[in-house]
Amino acid sequence: MSADRIPTYSVGELNTAIGSLLERGFAPRFLLEASVSRPQVKKGHLWLTLTDGTASVSGVVWASRLSQLSYRPTDGDGVTVVGKLNFWAARASITVQALDIRPSLSTVLRQFEQVRQRLEEQGVINPGRQRSLPTQPTTLALLTSVPSSALADMLRTGRERWPMTRLLVIPIPVQGPVADQIIKVLNRLAERCDALAVDGLVLARGGGSREDLAVFDDEGLCRCLAQFPRPVVTGIGHEDDLTIADLVADHRAATPTAAMVACLPDRDSAERSLQNRRQRIKDLVGWRITRDRQRLNDRRTLLAQQSPLKRLRQLQDDLHQKRDLLRALSPSRWLQRGLALLTNDAGEALSAVTSIKVGDRIMVQMNDGELETDVQIIRPASHQSKS
Image (spheres, rainbow, N blue to C red):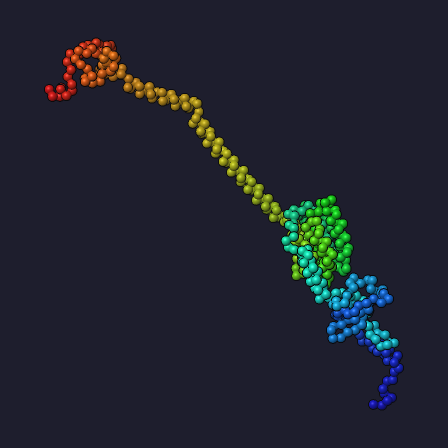
């Protein structure tokens, strides 16, 4: 190759050419997945090393940008960096200028496990301490971002299910390092629960990545939720998302809408229940009226049977029967038929000849008078039959 065809550079020219090449051929912004190593602040700028375990590159967050970050990484954190290349021609060095830094899923899950372990050991996470939800709350406090689709769904669900419950909407930030702000809101609300007649708290956030939900893994926030004076229901993210706030809450719902379903009774079900109760009461009243009417009829019948007039008639009938019987058995009736009544001197009735002796004076009572006679002959029935 001819020496005339090989370009010749000074060091500065070479570095400038490399910088121009990078500027033309590389994306102005990119996402970088990495782990943070040795982060330190110098003169207000955050310097760090970004590595994937086999390769590394320097990174920097300028002071003007550092104050705007919602998350500041620590040593070993997995991160996703929104960055661009900075090439310093003077020393041919490349640095990733971080425009934004977010924790990676691995970092979020590591924080989740660390906080969960501590709170479980201290009894803050304990299913046995969960409180039951009010059946028909007077007021529910809704803590979520305003405006948001989650809030719209919650309000619609509240109107449809149980419009008698007052919904107290309290705006909070739900993403980024906002745990301290949420804690302040919770503390103020806790102090006014009685004055506001709050029966329960719903902490809600719509869907997002697991990294976006990291604020609900904050230990201080979760301790505050565990100490809240009213039952707490969480509806954070999607069904598969689980945060520390869900673990300390009294009830965890899969979504914000599901949280409202858990807190409020169903108006249609309540109406059907009332209709069933009304019918049962109606049936019970009808049964009791029928029963009491039957009892009244039975008592009326018994009273009629025990009426003094009826009793008097019965006594009269009995008296007539006895009178007829006495008449039928009266001696005078037999006397009228030609029979006679014999008595001795003592007035004792004589019914057999064996009680009479010859010479006894007997009285013979007939229908129209009496006779006195002396017995001259006695003929027993056996004597008559022999003769």
